[in-house]
Length: 424
Ligand SMILES: [Zn+2]
Image 1 (cartoon, helix red, strand yellow):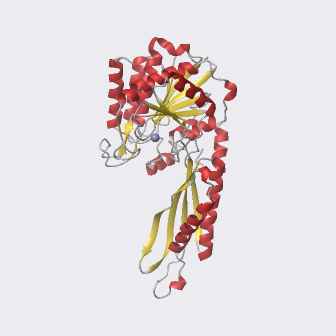
Image 2 (tube, helix red, strand yellow):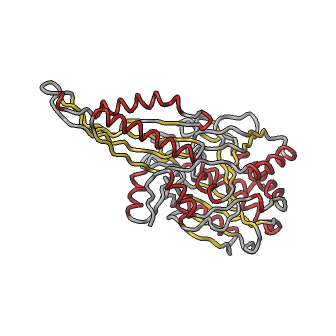
Image 3 (spheres, protein in one colour):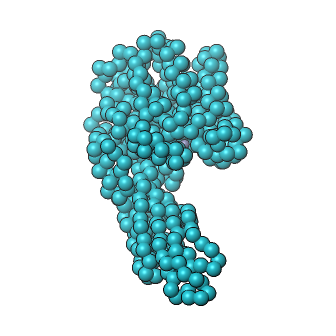
């Protein structure tokens, strides 16, 4: 990339880094993207969605048989105290999403030059999505109550609005996490799905000295549930990458009164959608048993988070072959699944998706020491690699190897998880 082009992209990327915004509030970031895209392609078609989301279609590629969406995430997450964070909102770019936007702009610039994208046998749309991080939930509940959004995640919200209706496959990028000695990329890193639950245990308050036998101890029910859960871990299938993290969210307790109310919350993660449904029921039984044993009451609330993400093996293999043949200067990692989650899992329910990992960072993802160390790789060598990769894919994708499901199918999958679906 020309030096002046790279400097411009770096400036925008660092501007986003230093002015992080939480999901559905990425107004400044969105403005930077829109200005850049219009500057280099004044006749570009674009659509606004989900408050801050933007979808761009490059001119003259509507009639291509295959359509790909290249997805970048606009939002930061919540980490007060981060040196480059927003002291008022607590927003901080400690998951690298600011560079996803930079990469998308750099790739766009390469494709739009001399309209080379027209030589691809598939169309590329650029979709900038809000709110990938599952944070700031009170505000999002508020937006949901006002009818402005229905999903906390920007991709499912875009799916609801039909933004992703026309695509055959999707590609996004994400930082790999950790430090790497060489330019590195990653494929086939699957993510877990998650849902979260609230267990409200209700007992009976009584004087703990005068007549404790008149009470029903909600803390005992919650403790029993935690013990049951600890014992039940033996029954969790370890190939399903289960994670459960129970925490006490609310408790009415005084030292001279039998506690009558406790709310315990937990997320539940697994890399397998069906197994997630089983787990959810298993946890419910453990909680029901605990309430029953003490004669108390239990109310359960389930909220769906994101679906598990299984990277598309067919497309990944095409990319891997190219990378190993043509980019041997890169280290290429594969098959390192993690129990983190992303709403790319939801999008991949509709059509095959890839999330390509890239190096260039140091410190812990979501931690105070996270930062970029090699923006030249991230914003220049990596987008150039993607450009070459996308030309390599042209003419090689067999549409019969791709799948397609509808938004209605997606909603059925969500309802099987047992969560509340806040849909009109
Ligand atoms: Zn992230």
